[in-house]
Length: 305
Image (cartoon, rainbow, N blue to C red; front, side, top):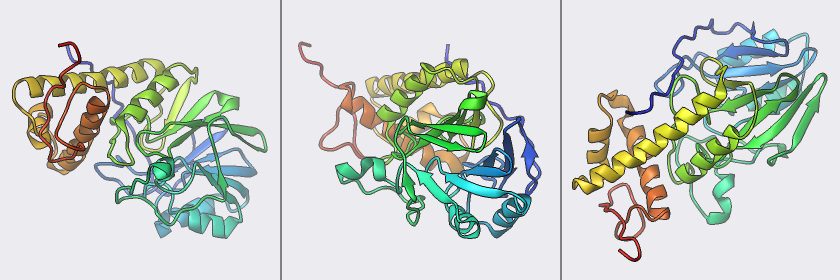
């Protein structure tokens, strides 16, 4: 029986209005709903008086003005960014200009793959360069709050989550979202790294996740376990497709994703491509040459068989 990921679709918001969601956390949602952003990007404000702003969001004037207006009587001291897709980091520019606060992130778009010489996909904020580069285990401290950096490559190579120590909460960006599974799109997206990052989080003990899109995940461990099982089952489906002579990604997607919103077909193909790369790397699939979206795949011939 296929694993059912317990997705959380019950989420409402009023655009441009800052809402208190916990003693130390407020949220304001940008008006950028869509098939990949759900109701929109949730920008989080941490603390009171002197605050951090996590994932300022897209560079929408309405959103930036609402955020800065809501914090007019407070001081923004830190701007941490989970990753550099265009719905997360571009508003850091005007927020930084208005506040003087420094930006914090793993690095520019694609920086987690830079040493491999990989050119990353479109859809990234290629203008963003953080004032302060962060690594796993680094700590950012402010007035009454502490954020620990948790490096979670997979969705992007520069993806960071942030643990709010005072509430044992994790800002999970797009790595773990309650409303949907996460798109992993090569070459910057990496399914092997994504699965390893999920398993790493499963070994941690945060009690609640605050994704950048949608509602909080209040029981993270079963949710993580379901995500891992779901991805493993996708690879079992791919193996079954290859065994039945379905050897190209578009045909696999048509077989595996029923029904599927046509707007999501390209993303599904990218995710299956990410799985194919992972299966080739782990000697469970093969193709001629370097894996590509238009390759013909086959089960790998294991040594000794």
